[in-house]
Length: 84
Image (cartoon, rainbow, N blue to C red):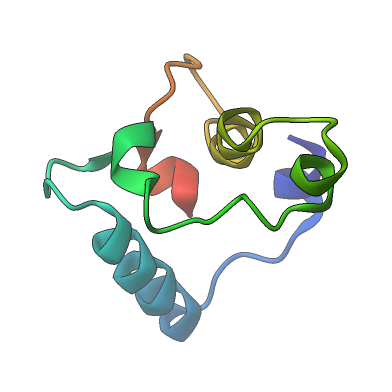
């Protein structure tokens, strides 16, 4: 929430790039990115915490998705608005 409050609003060019990235992740084209859609798109096995044994790949994947699952209900799905 803090980051959202202090970052600049997206200009139109950046917004289009964000939407393009979201569309690549949203394989089912349903307006949501779910963890199963991220498999193969985000490789957590080289993450330092996975290498050190501190976290599993699944935990890192969930952590990654949690950074976008903001505002409203934390449901494990990332909407286009949350991604933005």
